[in-house]
Length: 179
Ligand SMILES: [Zn+2]
Image 1 (cartoon, rainbow, N blue to C red):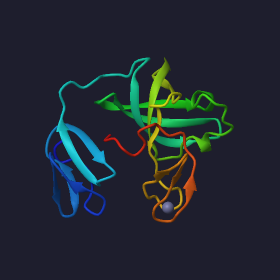
Image 2: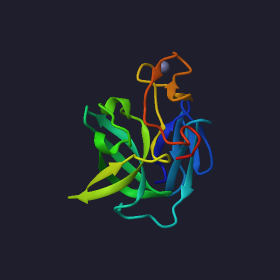
Image 3: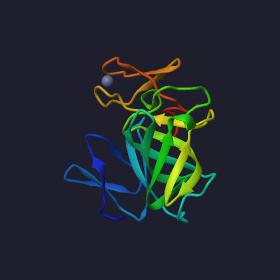
Image 4: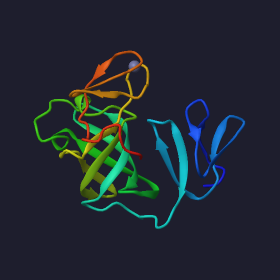
């Protein structure tokens, strides 16, 4: 929404559809905020059609809000390329996280990670997610030690700032796309 804060100039550079005032970046228009973590840019694109609710089979983008040993909670904010008019809650169970057996959700994702997932079922507006498949999984992850964006290093992720190595179930295009 116009005037809605999107971040601060220490974090991002404002791009099209955004402006800064007193160090804070705001939206200029009604649209969908896109954050390019790699280049630290935030922009707002006008919304054409806003999808109303996710459906079974939809590919969604969400942010992991909490992780327990068997389950992660995800805040769904996008279906495909379309931003949602609100937020929906998704649940990712460890058995739906990857094709191979994995013991703990902590090796799949961590809070604040951005993931791409498929909706496999819906009950009472709770969406059950799957990240099985090469194109699904974590697309951006942040260091649990210092919060910096992790970079892919072979099958693991590494923090370029503090050197910490972390495990995730990453999507094939980890760190490359815009969200
Ligand atoms: Zn770090």
